[in-house]
Image (cartoon, rainbow, N blue to C red; front, side, top):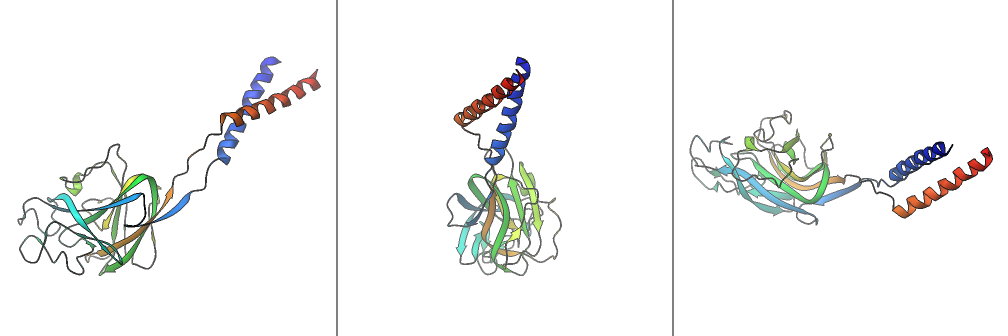
Length: 253
């Protein structure tokens, strides 16, 4: 009888602990991150501009160019990029990179990408563009590696530890585009104009024109965590269970 009673206590305690843990799950907190003004997120820019500018390396969106840091430009419609190959004339540099519409995040001559770095892991659920020209296809990727990601010096097809979130067609600038159906969580996210070099497995997009976009904001959900009940609350629950079992024992005997 003693073993039966002890086993009953353990089973009831486990069920109670599971119930308390479930009640402790917080609702997922939706957050809108405005680029450049929301604390907890930093914005940096990159483009494939490394290497010798010749017909082999720096042809339009040349796959052999390596990733280098670029300049983030802030506009009322969102974030744009000025890459390191910007020029006003030349055979293999990025002509008119600083002029409209190439003052944006674009994929004409070079692939511009924005890196969003968060102080904690987030699950991005949407991207909002504040401006676009010609077309508005985008690429989104999330870093799932163990270390801080390294971009500079690598080609887009050499990136490791990055998960394809997707390529999205015709995002436009009127509504937030829902992304990340697989609910990937990360502290580092790449968002840019459609980039098949970096994300060849993200799905095809409609249209073949260049994409010129300004990224205004992203939305996210913070993944829920289980809040373990305090030891004191479990102890009180255990005492209550002992009382219940004691009453049952009196009824048996």
